[in-house]
Figure 1 (cartoon, rainbow, N blue to C red):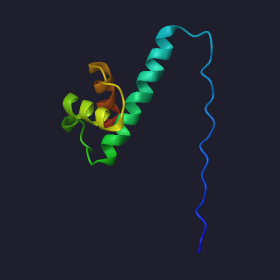
Figure 2: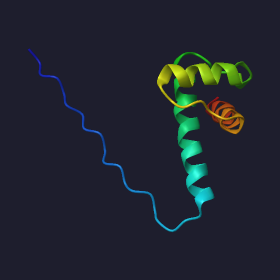
Figure 3: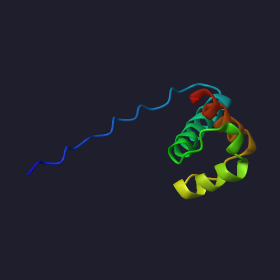
Length: 84
């Protein structure tokens, strides 16, 4: 009987201090958009045109992420386009 491999998550590094607030906001927006883009790609949404705001927001609710703004939805579509 084989033992299950234990995979440990890498430790998160703290964000650098002293940057403007806009940097932190855009950084977190990019992370959120990337998580949503990965979730959509995993479910078979490979075309940015099919990734409507409604579909992105439904996926966010399904994954447990706060409702994304229009700007975040636009960023999700750009990530999906870049992945193609």
